[in-house]
Length: 195
Image 1 (tube, rainbow, N blue to C red):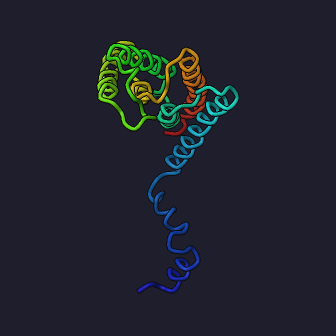
Image 2 (image 1 turned 180 degrees about the vertical axis):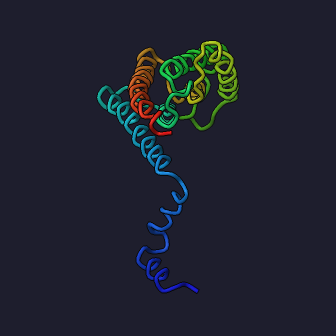
Image 3 (image 1 turned 30 degrees about the vertical axis):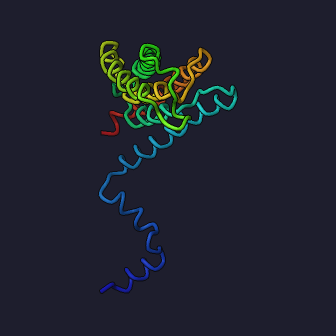
C-alpha cells in the first residue's frame, strides 16, 4: 500500500518527474554531481567555440572528432590523454596517417560516405589507418583515442582533404586543446581541497 504522503508526492511530481531525476543522484556525493555539471558545461563550451569559428569562416573547425575530444578534456582533467600535447599531436598524427594510407591504398577515388555505399578500399584504409595511429601515437607520447574518429572521417571520405580543410580542422583542434588546457588548470587548482 502507498502511504498518503507518498501518494500525494507521486501525484504532485508525476510518474517521470523530479523524483526519478533525484534517484539518479541518490547516494552520490555533491562532488560527483559538481564534476558532472563541470564536464557537461565545459564540453559544450569547447564545442561552441569551435562551432563559432566554423560559422565565422565557413571552414570545418568543428568536426565529429572534436565532440569526444571535448568530453575527454572536460571530464578527465589532468589525464595524459587529455593534455594539450596529446590532443594536438594525436589529431595531427591521425590526420597525416590517414591521408598517407588513403593515398597508398588508392582509396581517394573510391566512393565515400556521401555516396550510396562505402567501398572496400575505404574499409581497408580505415582499418590500416587505425592500426598505424595505434602504433605511432605511443611513440610520440600523444595517445588520444578520440583522434581515431579523425582518421575515420578522412578514410571514409567524409572530408575531402585539402590544405584549407586540413588547416581548419587542426585550427579547431588547437583552439579546443588550448581552452581545454586552461579549463583543466582551473579545475585541477581545486583538486587538493576537493579530496
